[in-house]
Image (cartoon, rainbow, N blue to C red; front, side, top):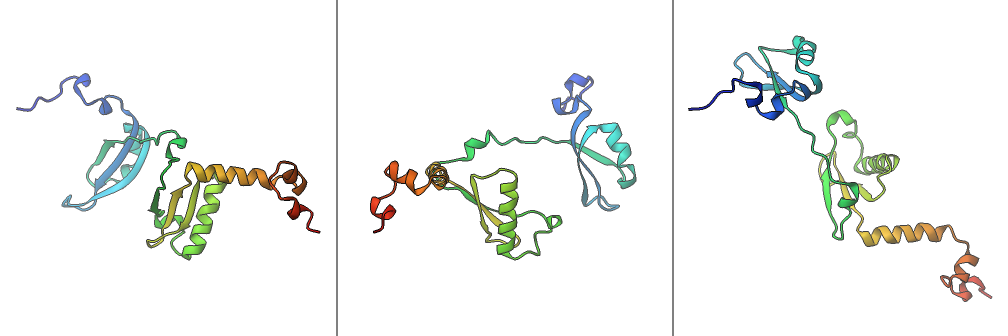
Length: 170
């Protein structure tokens, strides 16, 4: 026989506090065979329920929602190569772009958000793009090349990075 909670403390921890992140659904048809997602909301259950009252079929179902945080960003930099096909949903307006234009736009988006240790390439799936990491060695080489680009040929010559015959071609 199942024990039913009679005290708030006997409820699962996620449901003891009425303020939080909630995934809210309602019935999608009168038989209740389908479910319609109304979204993820943060707030008090009563306020969310009243806000969504005009979207309710028979009842609103609240499920505690958890956001899983990715570990510190440096952890995704691996010695090994990793890559994955990704796509945004149709509301992103990226589905009608060519694969090349989509990859270029998404690459610019990552750069604008200072996400510089990943490569964005044309995807192998419809409306997709490929996200891959730079290895630690590739990151070091990118930093080296960036630093070298700031040096003049004379600086490179002094540091032994440029052959004299390349600097004095005569």
